[in-house]
Amino acid sequence: MGSGAPGCPAQLVPGFERPRGLGLPVKSCLGGIVVLFIVSSFAPVFVQLDRTERIKNCQNPEFSKKLVVDYYFEKVQKLKFGVYDIDNKSFDLNDDDYLGGIECTLGQVVSSSVFTRPLELKQGKPAGKGTITISAEEIKDTRVVYLEIEARNLDKKDFLGKSDPFLEFYKQSDTGTWQLMYRSEVIKNNLNPCWRKFSVPLQTFCGGDFNKPIKVQCADHDNDGSHDLIGTFETNLTQLQKAGDGSQVEFECIHPEKKQKKKSYKNSGIIRIKSCKIETEYSFLDYVMGGCQINFTVGVDFTASNREPKSPDSLHYISPDGINEYLIAIWSVGSVVQDYDTDKLFPAFGFGAQVPPSWQVSHEFALNFNPSNPYCQGIQGVVDAYRQILPQIRLYGPTNFSPIINHVARFAAHSAQQRTASQYFILLIITDGEITDLDQTRQAIVDASKLPMSIIIVGVGEADFKAMEFLDGDNGVLKSPTGEPAARDIVQFVPFRQFKSAPREALSQMVLAEVPKQLVSYYKWQGWPPVKLPEMKIAA
Image (tube, rainbow, N blue to C red; front, side, top):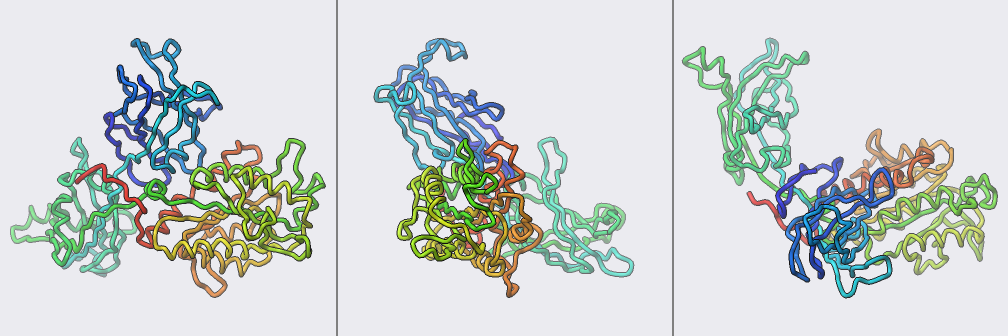
């Protein structure tokens, strides 16, 4: 992504649609050089990505160069760190002594404040007493500029009305050209407008240079695009920052041509900066690296519409190679999320089946048949519990989502009472799509949208998933039966059939891509910073 001098974090504009840059400081109890390898996107082999500087004659080196790698929450990014003793100037590692290494995932590194492992010559064979210690720091400047602006006595530009003013902010590039970096909304027929409070990432606003020239234009909007200039002025962030705490900063809005033609010309209005504040906007990595645990729960649909598990046409039928769509979904999503949960204990539930010994229909039964302790050890534990329960239950119905959503929501509500960004909950529901309690589920989702929680729904089979797409809310804000809108968009629905011929990791990348944004939106809405605040790496 970005690059910087060794040891200096590169800068990235915040945005979850882009990978985040990570710097990985490294220490080793064996000397030489550390080489970082990452699994290629094109083949399951490790390729060299970066390497530290070489340190001579030291058995406990601390490397100053950060190893930079792009970070994606929704992917399992496999890494390999190799320590080499280098006695020549050749770049080729084949003629150097391999002192040991480790394999891990990037998720394991970022979810640990300090990640230390013993070096191995090969898997299971220790490299003496050597260890390697890795920590992660995000390469970024997450400060954001917040501005509140109004104007007074703007020139009238419309023949039959007043003006429809809007603002445009430009920053000056290194070559002297002006680059547009923000455009406000249009306020109709108003010579004394007050625009909505807005924010621009500091990096976008001025590249972190508080004295970089900023040009502000005020214009009258025309539908045909031929907007009429009202006036302009130049400033910088240092001047803008003087606004706030009761004091305002004013600028004369000057039309250059009018000023040149009329000696009596004063201005075309006054632009008033009511407030200018710079605040830190925390990222997903800030929260995870600051101690936020991600709790993963699985809910599996065992209704009769899936068909009898022993039949090859059943969605629960386990093929000779040991898989079905339910298992693939559990593995795909769980393999990513498990790196962010320290105890690796995952509650797993089923719904819609008749359960022994009473054979009553249950919409919230533990896959391990232990309601007081429904936790499975790792994703493999969830898979094992699923396999073992299939022959012990009777698929039935109806398909009710609300009980399991409300179950996880109770834990999320209890965590929210602590008023800290310490716990976030992800519920994965795997279903064949024929939902019965739609109204109750809508209410449950609207209630859950006020909690630290996200819901992922994977639809298996060939059913009509219109109800699932409705719950997703991508075509508008989901509302409860009483009309209450969801506080946040927390549901992500994906039909499995779209990924049948795709690599398995494609499913997890699709369903988990929204989670970082959902997590950050919740904690930002609550005003809760990370439990452990990140160090500010770039000062004003």
